[in-house]
Amino acid sequence: MQITRVLLTGIFLCFLGVPLTVAETGHAPTPPTDPHEGYNSTNLPKGIIGVAMHVSAHRVGDPATLYIRAIHPEGPAAKASLAHGDEILKVNGTSLTGKTYQEVVVMIRGEIGTSVKLTVKGARGEREVSILRISEDMLMGERKT
Image (cartoon, rainbow, N blue to C red; front, side, top):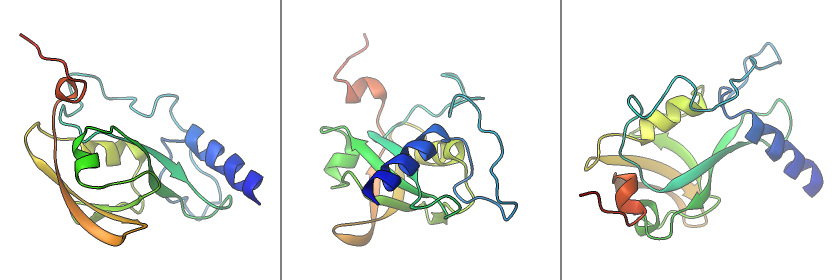
C-alpha cells in the first residue's frame, strides 16, 4: 500500500501541469514539460511565501490534492505555522478544484508586500492564514544595491 502511494505521488509529481481534478473522460491532457511553461521572470508575479508544493492522489482516477512539500525555514509560510504535509484547500477564498498547478502558483504569488490568504488542512485542523509575500532576494538573505 505504501509503495503504491509513493509511486502514485511520484507519477503526479511528473504531471504538475494537469488539472487538480481529472475530467470524466478518464484521462488527463498531456502536461507541459515545465510546470511554469508560459511564464517567465517578467510575467510571473514576484512576491513569494516560501513554499514548495506537490500534487498527489491516493489512486489513479481519484481527485488530486495539493500539498505543501517543503517550507523555507525563515520564510513567511513558516512564520504562519504552515507545515510539510498541509493540504492547501483555498487561495483567497477560491477553491482549487479544477485549477492547474500553474493557476495555483499565480494565485499564491503576487505583488511583493501584499498578503495572500490560504485555507489549509493539517495536523492543526482546517484553518485560514494570511501570509505576506516577500521577494526571493529577501528570502535568500540577499540584498540588491
